[in-house]
Length: 245
Image 1 (tube, one colour):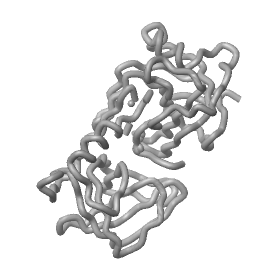
Image 2 (cartoon, rainbow, N blue to C red):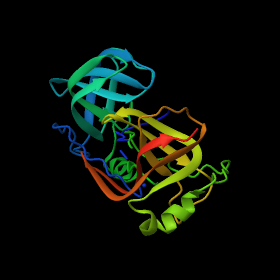
Image 3 (cartoon, rainbow, N blue to C red):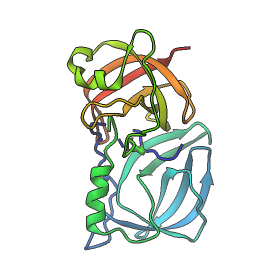
């Protein structure tokens, strides 16, 4: 897994899930949303890197998609999702408060970059979320997956979304992004090589596990204009899906 949010949700295109920065401090006049943090402790897991950081005199836990990090390093970020009482199953640990960060930079983030990041941080049909989530930025031109029996293509789904809202259907595609264990669910993004306008990526919530690049078929309910709170809003999403063997 290369990126997240959920968190995610998954933030996050979703065609758009927009992620709200809920971190309470602001430290830079040029980009008030930017945070400069110093790493005090690092915990690595298979999907996430958990960092205890000093942020403007306050010690916080943040999480980012797995990456190399070491105590003493300084990073910058400007988009994060606050989660209360978040339990990491892999660590068997509950964090009273943790911030899922869209991405860490070793250089200060300018206001122009922040605006672009906020737009690009949308998770969904085009996080996540990274939750962490955002959806993939571009359609993978190498993907071409024929629909399974009884399923429809991503292009058909988005073009006729009102016909599918509230219905349980099958969707087949290749896994391009995974955000595990965000808000109690795994957030999967698939593409099949088709698109409707700028919509080429379908977000799916499930309790099942998949691997990046797997070609999978899910059956779940299509929800329209779904608001999960925490700043996550989806124009279209497949929920409570199960893998079809």
